[in-house]
Length: 303
Image (spheres, rainbow, N blue to C red):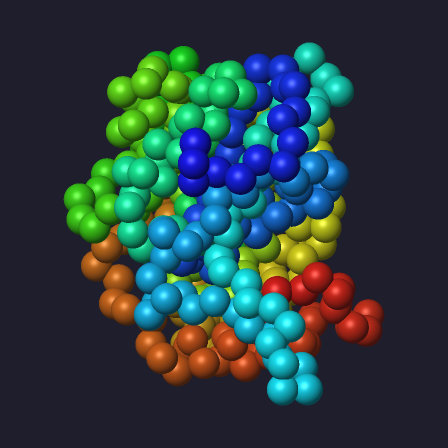
């Protein structure tokens, strides 16, 4: 595991691993912010990292410098952080991996990740992603998945996960799935669907949906109130926009009609217009809420 820097080696009980990668497979940052929320709410401990030197192109993701008084104080390269959490309950512990989807050497990156999983005795792996879709914010968060393990598949189906149909460019998630299948590690890739008319830097509503699903699947007790508060603020802002803008209101109504009881979307819907996207960004940037009770929460989503 030469690509892995281990700061300490925790002794864990049948841990499950959750991973998320920022970038292309993380629309509205719902996957990485879900991991961040779990780390914060569970009080997870950082224990290892995967340095990014060989996995990222500096032409795409540059290192960050801090220069003070004409001197370089620090030069920080991208890393992927690993945290652990010991579950006081009967179910297994957690390992949480969060980073940015590598640009290079995917197979080597996955080998490093799964070598750590084998070393820690990981019993199942869950990868989180986000995508934009023709879904309304007024309906339950849609989560789709890719999973082959029969028992895990049945459990996720009972919780309302729709199984994906897709053909096109692949993400790191698929490489992980294929390698986990070869190593007989039960694996699921879970994707939160974000409304296409609200392309934000973060969608807490979808993060809350992913976190809630994970809590049920993994049988863990985690406080989701901070995510739910931020999600409520976002819903209020979008509801206000719909009341003010007939075009947005009509779009949401059509999305509600095509949402369906089995998670089907209408692929014939036209692309969301730039004017609607700008309107959503503007109302959220102004920080206005329909509650009439003063300022929104500090952890409100950013436009």
